[in-house]
Image (cartoon, rainbow, N blue to C red; front, side, top):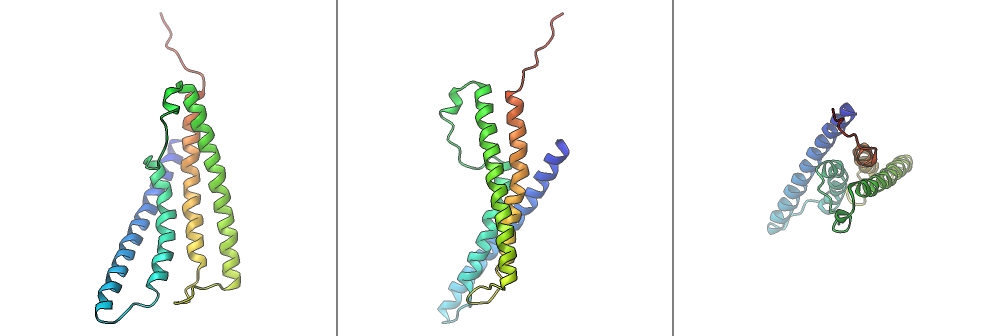
Length: 167
């Protein structure tokens, strides 16, 4: 279990660095395009590239954000429950999320393969779109084991408590 967890965290961190690089690239491209407009020049397809990079930023940062517990959670009701009840709710939530993102991963792969077969390209630069859809699948696919680890941790909260033996 620890090995799977470490591998998952390692992969999530690497994907997060790719997402960070994509944000920097988006920022540089947008800034350069704005500055060039002063000279009446533009970079063709800037809006398109920023949009495609945005898909990578969002999907590649999902797993690391989940590892760091960076998602918004409304816990004011759950905090008042017993630790067992909290574990049950966390387990149900994690399992539901695993199933949801597994379906998103699967459907993204199906969609990317369809785009690849059809030769779908972006409008301005005519870039193939399917690699970015595969990127969404990779990001969501990396989130699944992170959520699975959270599910197992939540189940451990629900399981029988071990008490210390008295002599």
